[in-house]
Length: 311
Image (tube, rainbow, N blue to C red; front, side, top):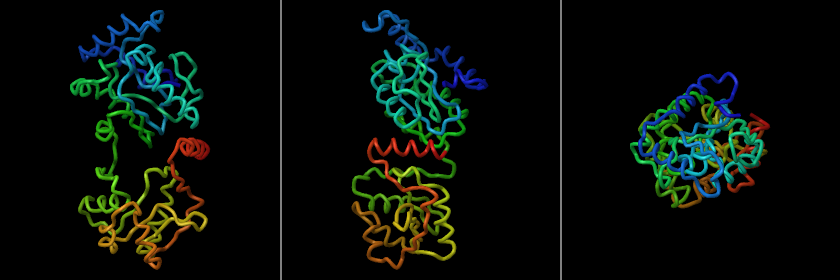
């Protein structure tokens, strides 16, 4: 279902009605309409959309996928984001395999495609020449994305495709979180952890919890259980355990900060913990989630099925 077609989503309908009439950027207006007139030979019998392209998907989604802009002969032709081009073939195939889409293809606005728990949009709503919007065009288009994000108040995960991570970071509310970028991440997990702890804002922190971004099934209740154990005197390292197997997340008391700041290489804190097993207190959290990694597409499919089965 699309936000524009969803019964009762009056605010989405209003935003999209206004969006498709937008003519703020003369260069983009000229290009999208030129492409719609001249057409690609393979599509010469089709009527091109030739207007700004609204977002598409479930208004109650927890997953937000952000592209760059509509393709000249894709979304600009079909009127739906990522529809009618090769990038859409890959995206919707993946969303179908992970349970977010009811079919693996997206060819037109009336092809029956429906998304569940996923919404797709782009920071730039019109197809740009050479797929390169100008900075002023991105700025002019920004209020449309801001309106969408304000309405999508259930989003938990944002996947940015292309070169617009900066816009995502600027517009997605991180609450009290602070985003730290470790540019030389290739030096290894130990280096990343030490760098993050060094760059963290100077506050009266007494402990740090380390979670890995490729483990989306770790639950907030698991983290809370580790923190409760630490507050009760466990530590100085508290680790999650799954059926007795140590895993992630891990909590480090800042009494260990000097040792943590000396970490380097790709072993993370494994060598340090192996040398001091007496530091480690395990807390069983297997009933609350999983620390399964998402490293390949098969992992993503499995995690997607688990998320849909256990919302």
